[in-house]
Picture (cartoon, rainbow, N blue to C red):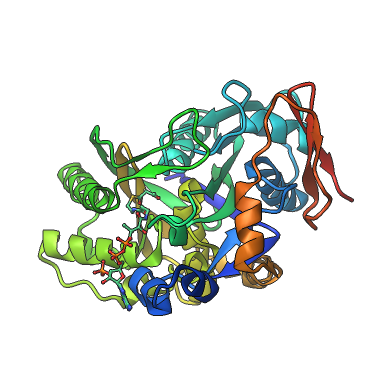
Length: 384
Ligand code: CAA
């Protein structure tokens, strides 16, 4: 039987990084609240010339260097921190990468779930036209107001994934469990650059979504939980994935080991929340960390506040060791330049108005940068 799924992937993040111990000191909080209680070590902070578009283009350009654009039929970008109410992030990225006009470009949104919606859409395109390849990019900058409880759960990253038939990394199995539940747990009004969240409600909503999605998955004949070898859960902060794992064990009555989800936590702990990208950062973290995953089944739980949840599974490819790139992924994380809390706060406060022309300072070392605003339009350029 032919399969479809994730053939290869690439991570990108920001130029800067903030240490959570520094943030804790500045906020007068015991560092262990962030390091242990929330489970975050560092978080990515964008430079003035970086945003979701530059991260997306950076991740995708590295992927296309290896795979080219032949048979590429769609570029689907998921984000909940888009830069325009009309023009898709995908269309900016399409131009920056010089893709053929025969590639459709669309932006998808449903909070952090959008990346999984894009992946499912890509699988549908490949099922209809098996020679087609689809570029799926999840890209986000998680932003809460300074000094709020959400502040230590910020971060940023993009994951670009090439979705094809006969994929090398992860073949997605056909059964999905779904849960759409209308709830105001986390959202971002159109006139706000930061998210609004009811923290306790959001954690409960996440767990309700997980159990409802699991029940749908089980009712539709998804793999029994005993046959799922590893789990990656959406990670707004890594402690949330631990809570999800315990919730699933309690709900199914099956003893699950913490080791089944541990290696999926390493990268998110360093990058912080990346909303749509977070689940796929966790997948990269798992595939990079373990050497004996070939043929193993991974369960993935995608959650987007508001809310939509999906539980689905994939089988790791026999040749994944030849395709994964742990050194490159580590370099993306380690190459960030540290900032202190004062500089982080200045960057956080810096929001450009579309009504004034502006040029941004040259900071990023990424291959693309946000150059500024001209005539109310955002301008991007290659840095090389
Ligand atoms: N040492 C060790 N642990 C400590 C500690 C210390 N000194 N002090 C506190 N802790 C622990 C607490 O016991 C708690 O752990 P448990 O939940 O396991 O009991 C943890 O640290 C956090 O402490 P609080 O609950 O007191 O933290 P808080 O109320 O200040 O904020 C939060 C936590 C609500 C998650 C907040 O960071 C927030 O609002 N974040 C944004 C919302 C969010 O991420 N929600 C997740 C679900 S929604 C979703 O997933 C979508 C998305 O991406 C946003």
